Each structure stands twice: as C-alpha cells, then as structure tokens.
Length: 153
Image 1 (cartoon, rainbow, N blue to C red):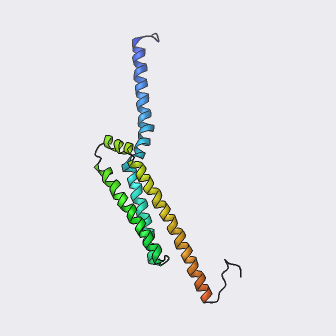
Image 2 (tube, rainbow, N blue to C red):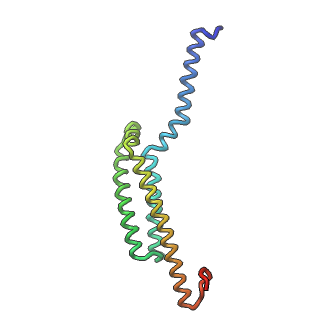
Image 3 (tube, one colour):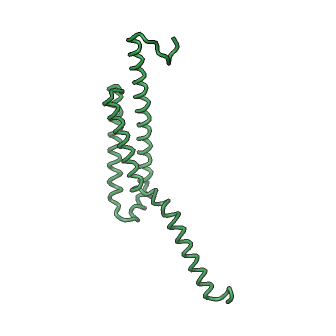
C-alpha cells in the first residue's frame, strides 16, 4: 500500500480531526469554561461571603471602631449590589453561546474586579482589626502599669 493512496489520505484526515478534537476537549474547553462568568460567580459569592462573615466576627468581638464598621459595611453593600447586578446577567444566560457572549461583553472582568475589591476590603479588615486590638492591649497594659514588650521603655 502506497502513502499516496486515497485510503491513507482519508486516514490522515480522520486522525487529524480526532487529534484536534482531543486537544479542544482536553485543553481549550477547560480553559474557556473556567473563565466563563458562571464559574467566576461562584468564587465571587464565596469571597463576598467570607469578607462579610469576617466583618461580622470583628463586630462581635468588638475589635473595630464604629466609624470603621460603618465604612466597611457601606463598601460591602456597594459590592453586594454590584454582585447582584452581575449575577442577574449570569443567570439570564441559558446556553453556552450566551455564556460566551457574556464573557465577550466583559462580565467576567467585572466579576474579577469585584473579587479583587473584596480581597482588598478583607485585607483592610485584617489590618484594622489587628491594629485596634493592639491599641486596646496597650491601653489595658498601661492601665495596669505594665510596660509593653513591643515598645522600648
């Protein structure tokens, strides 16, 4: 059998099509689907919930000042409203092509931006709660006449 036979040519075409399909299925599809708004929305909801939960923990423990609490709550409310807007767009997409259209319209970018802002607020909460806790400990130590080991005497 010669390499120029029509059967060999058909086999080459078949093998090429199968190879390309395998690459698309194993590499490109997971990459694209991980960037779809519906996939990113799950992470956004988790991140926003964790940030809200941490704020509530800080409020319960009394490690934040009232003005910090109000500022953080206001910022989280804005992010929650943006999340609801984006969520409505994501849930309106019923087919994969509509999901891809949302991806092309920048919905995923908006979700990533909200996730980033949640992370910033979370880090600021950690810093503010830690700083206020250190200040309270220092005041408590001073009220008891204890010199702080963190500051030189």
